[in-house]
Length: 140
Image (tube, rainbow, N blue to C red; front, side, top):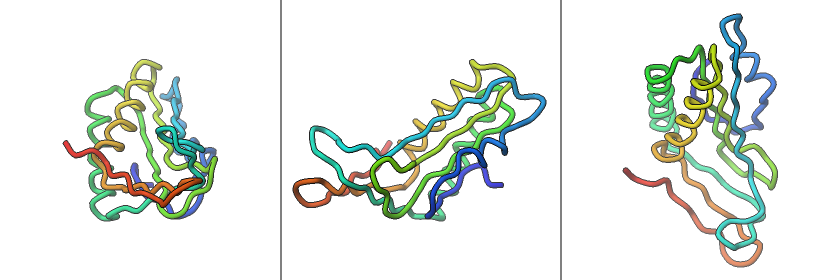
C-alpha cells in the first residue's frame, strides 16, 4: 500500500486503520478533513478537487518519508480525494501509528499541514450564491 495516494472514490477510514495496526503501535491518531457548508462567510454546497497526479503523489510520498524521519512512528498513511464532493464527504484522511501518543499527534499534524501547503491539489468551491471559485495551495 502506498503511504500517500489520491482517490476518486470515497475514503474508507476503517480499512485504512487496519493498515496501521501492529503490536508495536500503542497510539493511533487520525485526522479527517470533511466538506463543510461554509468558508470565509460564504455558503458552500460542494467542492471539486483536481490534482497533478504524478507530482501530487511524488510530493505526498516525500512528506510521508519526512514524517518517518522526523518522528518516532511505525507507519503513516494519507489519502486525498479528487473529483466532486458533497457536503459532509471525507476530503482527506491522515492516520499515524506510533508507540507513543506524542509522536503520533506530532506526525499527524505535520503530515496534514505539509500536504495542504505543498501538494499540488486545487480546490474549487461551489457556493450557494455566486459562481464557483478555485482556491490554490499556498506556494512556499
